[in-house]
Image (cartoon, rainbow, N blue to C red; front, side, top):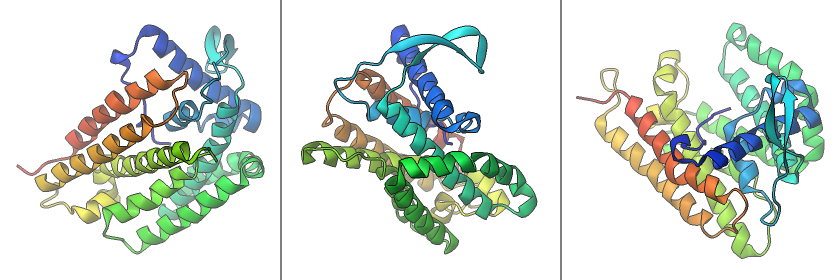
Length: 286
């Protein structure tokens, strides 16, 4: 769906990278088992990250070898069935469904045909995911509608648009107790969602301008002579780094689990690396 939340592999130990890949494959198997082959196409790094984040602290993953469609000639390590993987498989289907619906609203009929076909293949999986996680779907539906309305009115506040997407990601927070655990989880997911929205808008900046689509970054920092003002890139980097720092602080208040070291790699190293790459590709005023 996005693909921005991933580890900085050069800084991972070999065994950590193998475990990360096993979690990735585990979510893929969960999608196929619960929602069918089409749902496996919805696999993305953000939901693998969420599965690791929501993993029960005292639960160690069981990793086995298995062949799959992506690698029929060589067995691959994967995490066996787990409540966190099953939950994130359902969340992945629901989020992918609403992402497709949002794309259908943005594109003209001809260009939207591939997305319409994808919706047909995913509709059965979506209905099952809604039965399994009705509250999550209801919250996502509500917040997607608010975001779509805001974008349709060409809202000029970058933070306003990012806030509405952040509320969507916050809906994934489980009913944790005590409150000292739930509050940092909500804070973490909120700033994760805000960060993803702004990074994605930066990544799509040039393409959205060419196609005349709403882009919160372009509205806030309109291009001058076809390029983004340097002031805009400085402010974007500052606000992205701010959300990154806040979610790092929130993470340190959460209980440790078996994936904590890999998660730290992703939020302390992987996310800053993405900021540099995405901001760096924006054309800057000379």
